[in-house]
Length: 277
Figure 1 (cartoon, rainbow, N blue to C red):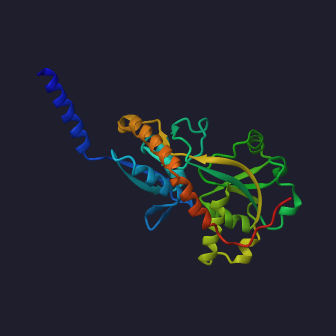
Figure 2 (cartoon, rainbow, N blue to C red):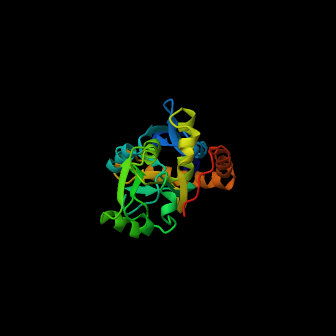
Figure 3 (spheres, one colour):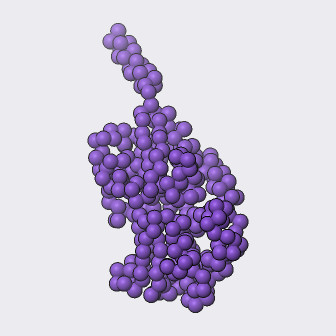
């Protein structure tokens, strides 16, 4: 009899858990990193967003809302523990000890774009030596290029590194020759150039004056979780475990590969940029 009562109690617990409302979770995303993660009419859009929504569909225990924020602000929220998670940070454990990372989601190509008139004057593949004396633009919140020699040159003032809030601002600085090179993900830069041509900020001739230089490295985006204020997120460990499992499933079943193909097919049809020497 006792065994039957225990079994009935266990079944009731399981049934209660199955019928419980999903846990409400809010995730932050970069609002200005198209085509990967951006805001459009107040909604989160982009390749990472589509992948993560596919993942969250496999996590019925959770109802996940996505809130776009400017990247520096999102990082600050995670660093304070006032937000649970953010995408898509690169893996930088030393610079961001307050962040825990999911398994890698996507591979990105970190590329150099060069201002008009400069490309043929340096061997830009010789990184970072050929960048001595140049003004390098990065996006705000972007942890500097993961190269010890490059960081040493920045710290010693041999390279003048500056930040702007987003791709568009950095591209305008590059075209107006206020910086010499701009380093960011290749596809993201090309998408922003296309948007600028479409909205009249640039014409095709102006866009084609920029020169695509070498690919410096590949990076992977993640879902980053705050290590602080964990008592505010009692579901944290369970969520991370379920997320990584569901992410593996959408990778294995071809969902991620399909979405990557769809976005790659929409790569901007701009004039082919020249190649630096």
